[in-house]
Amino acid sequence: MTHATAVPTVALHDGIEIPQLGFGVFLVPPEDTREVVEEALGAGYRHIDTAAAYGNERGVGEAIAASGLGREEVFVTTKLWNASQGFDSTLAAFEKSLGRLGMEYVDLYLIHWPVPSRDLYLETWGAFEQIHEEGRARTIGVSNFRIEDLERLEKEAHRRPSVNQIELHPRLQQRELRAWQAEREIATEAWSPLAKGGELLSDTTIGEIAARYGKTPAQVILRWHLQLGNVVIPKSVTPARIRDNIEIFDFELSDGDMQAIERLDSGERTGPDPAVFVEP
Ligand code: NDP
Image (cartoon, rainbow, N blue to C red; front, side, top):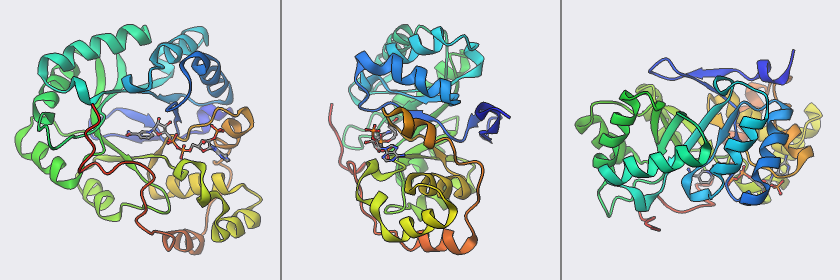
């Protein structure tokens, strides 16, 4: 069995299937992105997560085009940056993303941040619905939305987002938001699933579990996400880590180990708080 067939998919509420493990490219330098994404595709990843703000959509598109894979074999996500929120500006920004990717459609388009203080996300979502109806994004979702933002969409928009991509890892487990989303069939996608590769990887509980399974701490954390049902998109520019992070389908954490990791939640963010983040 190849890696590509070993990665399960999660069915979104609109019937679109998203590979549960993807590859994130935040902070991958634009000039290195093609090579790094080629490495990921070679290792078996078939889901790439980029954004207009990352400045590396072009490299993602080039790697996929050069891979010999059909466009329909790779699930591609990109995101609308905050400064482009609004109806017409969203349509224009989406065109630019497609141009840089060199694609006719994306699989998933996300509003990157709600930016509540600017109050433009409902209007922005209207443009997302149009893009979806035109078939240029197979499915549409949001990122960093809080329950109150999702409730407004629920009340005022035609379409429900299929995904909310949020910061989520053992130190920030987002239980309330995950449960709320599960009730509405909004898939939870975890960004910084390894808490940015920091101190969490040296946690003694994680280390002890990893030693017992003969796995690395990163593999244990990614496996924990999978067993919770999260979609995960770890990032690495290191070939050995890129390969390690997909070797997570040959073991299963026991209930006791899942519970031990549950106890590591401290509510600690590694990134900005969506309630106040406004960076244009
Ligand atoms: P991650 O939690 O994926 O951690 C990435 C860091 O961990 C890198 O420094 C990497 O180092 C290191 N690392 C990766 N694998 C291993 C391993 N096996 N062992 C040890 N260290 C490892 O953080 P990110 O913030 O990159 O999040 C992942 C993706 O989520 C992003 O790339 C992006 O696509 C998305 N994201 C979305 C956001 C949003 O607002 N929607 C915000 C932030 C991220 P190295 O690269 O040097 O190997």
